[in-house]
Length: 451
Image 1 (cartoon, rainbow, N blue to C red):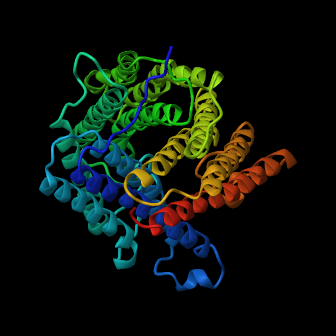
Image 2: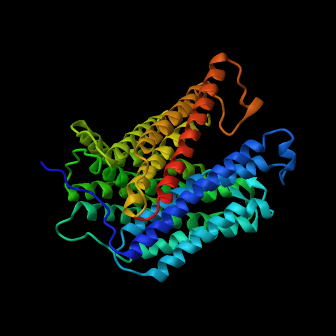
């Protein structure tokens, strides 16, 4: 059976410009995250730390680093895919949405230097309790919401005879729907939270439900990218577009339970927390059929050539890391550091897929081809470091070391515990090198100019 070609055609100059803008915002957020990772090191360095504006600058920098490297990066790349799935030119609307999000991102980045402090390390969206930071986060959210509405205005690829490109476009539409549901969940939590609640507990409950739903968006878009990378790296992905679309629908289906979960449990109840944990844990299994289809496409895959080599490298690296993170998710049995091991695997699996998408898109947006050798090794280095990092976390978590602790608070006593955290540190260093290498590859492609 011949393989269907799955691709993202760029339908107009407006689509090209909008896609490029959101891609640059994603890359800028990673650069900003890198700067704050350097500030994290400086905040722990004797003498130097005394020059920083806040006593608690380490946690301030960590909040901004996490929001840039997870929330803003992933949603900016989602914005790239939503831009690619539109076919009607609305340049004024596109510019409005983008500049809202870009302005919000800029405010988040500068907020610590103009007085924003009081960091709260709640799950999903850690915050700085300050009006400037809230303004930046709010503007970015409004930009994403506006871009979502724009994407929802066009429903391409719904003809009787679906093409591979149309199936991918509809997959991104489904991810837009799950994102709408996530935003609705945030709004429902905000409306139901007691006015007397404040501090970290308030933001933990505020972002708990919607944060879990947002993972369905990231996973669905990762699967869209897996199909794209498989098809363009000489894999034998033989599913018909209609069956591929069916699998995309299956992945989005679990979010229909979200309104019922809000009706069944009070937002601050243990039942609410458990319900959304179970939704992500078992609802995430809906990605298995399409994931296995991509695995099967590799079984008799031809040897990749040209760009296919680094696209295949990104695909395999993403799949390996996401699989490890998924397995660890079923091993969570408490509040130890198996939890961050799980989400580092799953989230970075998504990130590597999106890096592969960037390599695929840059030449098609008119930039130079990424340096092939460097682009091939970058996902391997990054994923290898992350696998060592999360295995070190999982190993030490097996001894009950609690999450969100550091230094003496970790209570490391056995040699095996110390070895596990040493493995984590080594893997973290390697993954940092891999992350920087991605920015170098992207920079070289962009600096090559438009062809």
